[in-house]
Image (cartoon, rainbow, N blue to C red):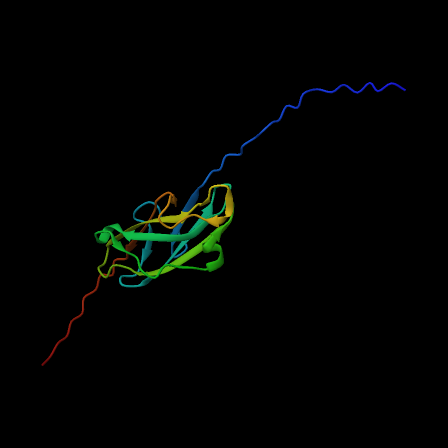
Length: 165
């Protein structure tokens, strides 16, 4: 029997996948995605429950995810005490996963006052070529869109009279 195998030169092929990093944030006050003023109505001086839903829209993990929020109606005052509901997810947020952060913010004390704040999520991409290793803290960052939220304190007209004789 004759061997009819045809041999050719080797022709190697290489492919490189591209990475995409991305975060989105949706901020809510008392469960309302109040992007536009006047936003949700709250009682003057009441605690407002603020949630931040952060989603990895990229195709590789984002590490050490945090949220920064500033109250623009109070001179960019930083919101303190923002915590993650799942610390492990905030440490490594895989593609298409969402982690929720929360904070409590006091509503303005005056009647009819608009409260506006602006939040953004931040994270660190992995080391190039090693998706299971976070990049350095002082290296490139992954940042979300900035998402506003608005609340307006209700009006409570009233008059108290004290009569003394």
